[in-house]
Length: 415
Ligand code: TYM
Image (cartoon, rainbow, N blue to C red):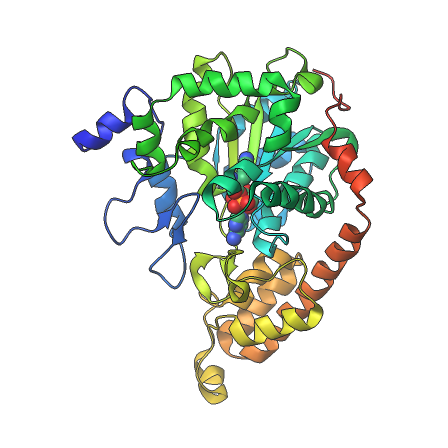
C-alpha cells in the first residue's frame, strides 16, 4: 500500500484486501458509486472485483444453505449469479435460524423522474427477501445526494424522491413492513437519525473518505459528509418508531457500486456498539450498447425506462441492443452467436424466469439456429409485459398511498 493511501485509510481498518478496492493498474475495471466502466466487451470481471473488494462469492454451498434455512427455492437472481457476492450473510442466516430479528435496508438516488430497468433489480430482490424472511425494510431516498452531485434544484430533487417512491412501491412492498423516507424531510422529523449521522461523522476523517471515495480539495463539503448519511440507516436506532431501543442487525441488497459506503459503515458500526451491516451485491444490468458500462439514466438511448411505451422498447432493443451475432445470416448459421457479449441474451438472464427456456435460447443462439433478430424479438416480448404491468401497478399508487409508506410509524414487527 502506498504511503499516501495508508495515511488515507488511517486507523479505519477497511476490511478489504487491496487499497480500499481501488484499481491496481490501468486495465482494471472502474467500479464506484459514480462510474462503472470495463474495457472488456464481456463487462466487469466480477471474480476479480470480489478479490479487490474482499467480499465473499455466492457459490453453490451458499445457495444450498440459503435454501435449507428458508425452506424455499432461491430467486433466479441468486441461481444465475446476478447476486454474486456478499458480506456476512451467513451471520444473518444463523440469526434467522435462531428466530432473531433483522431488517433490510436499500435505497435510491432520485436523479430522474423515471427509473430504468437496472434500478429495478435491487428492489425486485429486496421485495423477494421481504417476503421470504417476513422482515421490515427501510428505503432511503437520497434527494440530498442528488442535489449535491447533480445540476438539479433542491426542490426538484425532493419532488423526484416522491416520484421514485411510486416506482418502488409498485414493486409490491408490504405497507405494514415498509418505511420509505426522503433524507431532506426525514432529517427534520426524527432527531435520532441526525444524531447517528453525527456519531458516524465523528468516527471518519477527511483523509479516510478521500481514500475510500476519491474526494478532492475542490469537492463541496456536503459531498464529504454525505457517506455518513447513507451509513446511518444501518443503525436500527435511526428508526426508534420501528425498533425502539433494540439493536437489530441489517442486511443490504444493492448493486456492488454502493459497496464503498458500506465498507466504511462496517468499520464504524462495531465502534458504535452495532453489528456490521451484511450485504448482498448484484452485478450491473448493462447498457443497451454493451456490457462495458451499466445501464444509466443519464443517456436516454442506453436505458429502457419504466415509462417507455411498447414501441419505444421495441425500437431501442432493435436499434441499440449490442449483438453477439455474426455479420451475415450465413456466417451466423455457420459460426453461431456469442451469448457472453450479446445484450439481448444478458437481459433475458435478468428477466426471463423460465430456466429451461433460457437454456434452450442459449443453445440455439450459440449454435446459430437462432438469429439475432429472433433473439431480440424474444427479449422485446419478455420486456414489454413486464414494463406494462409495472406501469399499471404504478398508476394505482396515489399520493395518499405514498404518504402511508412514508409516514413515521410502528411497523408490523416484534424485536
Ligand atoms: P442509485 O439511484 O444510483 O441506484 C439505486 C439502486 O440500483 C442499483 N443500480 C443498479 N443495479 C443493477 N444494474 C444497474 N445498471 C444499476 N444502476 C443502479 C444501485 O446499486 C442501487 O442499489 N446512493 C444510492 C442510494 C442509496 C442506496 C442506499 C442504495 C441510499 N442508501 C442503500 C443501496 C443501498 C444511489 O444513488 O443509488
